[in-house]
Length: 379
Image (cartoon, rainbow, N blue to C red; front, side, top):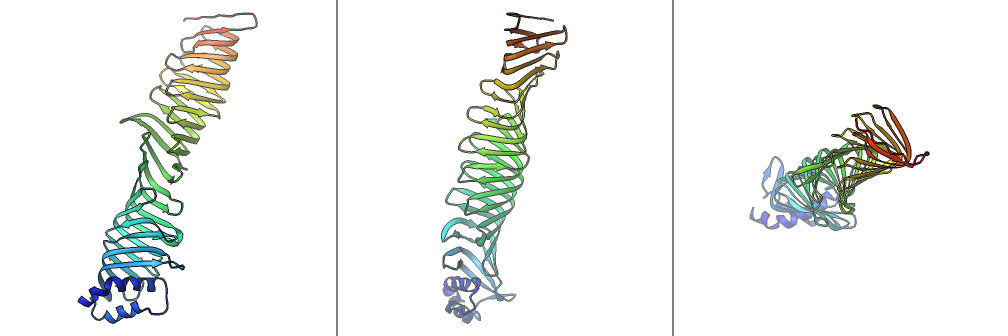
C-alpha cells in the first residue's frame, strides 16, 4: 500500500491521459499501475487511489481539463473514474477558462465528458462570473458547461437563479432556462422570465420570452414593464422591449402601452417610435398617437402624429398634430389642427393651438378661422 501511494499521483495522472485520450498502446505509466494493481485496494472490481490527479489533452497536446481529488475510484474496464471532493481547471485552446469544485464527480469513457455533483462551484477568472448548482457537465469539444438543478449565478453586475444554465466558454455567454429570477444591481432591476441569455463581454442581457422587469428605488418598486422580448444594456442602462409592451409607473401613476419602447434608466425617459397609448389611472385620461415619449422624472408626456386625448369621466375628446401633457397638473397643450369636442353641454371647437384640462372640460382653443376663439365651460 505504501508503494502505491508513492506513485499514485503521478501514475494515475498519466494513466488517465493515455486511457481517456483513446491510445491503443500501453504507456510506461499504464504498465506501472498494472504492476501495482495487485497491491492496490479493490472494491467490486475497481481500483482506489488517494490524492489523485487526472487530466486530459487535445490532439495538439494542449490541456482540456485537469482535476485533483481526495480519492479516485477507477473501474477496471477503463470506462469511467469516480472522484471524491474534486477541484480543478477547465481549458480552452490550452488556456484556463473555468475553475470548478464539487462534492463528487465522474469522468466517462475517453475523458470527453466530466460530470460533477453536489455543491458545484464554477468560476470564470476572465470575467468574475460564479456559477453554483448541484450538477455540472463539461463538454470540452463543444466549449460547453451545463449546470443543472437550482442554478445560481453571481457577477458584479448581475445575480440570477434558474432551473438550469448553459455556459458557452468561448463566447462567455450564459443561457438560463426555467423559473428565472435575475437581479441587476445598478440600477436595481428584478427580471422574471423562462429564458434569458446573458452576454457577459457585451454587458447585455436578452430575454426572448414573455418577461417582467421591476424597477426599484431602495426596497420600493417604482415601475414595472412587461413585453415579449427585452434587451438590457448593463453598461448603457438602456432597456428595450418589443411586442405587447406594458409599462406601469407608480409616480407618475400612468400606464404606457406600445409594441416597442426604449427606457433610458438613467434619464427615466421612455420613447416609442410606434403607436403609443398613455393612460392616467386616477384621472381616467387617455392619450394616443403614432409615436411619443414619457419623461417619468419630469412627469411630462409628448405625443406626435395623429395625437388624440380623451377623458372617460365626461367624454371630452381632443385631436391635434402634437400633444404635450404635464401629468401632475393635467394640463394638455395641443398644437396643429386642434379639434376639441365635449358632449354635455355639446361643443365643438377648432383652431391651431389649445390648452386646458380634459377631465374638467376646461379648454381654450385659439387661432380659428374666424379669428381668436376662447371658450371656457365649467359644468
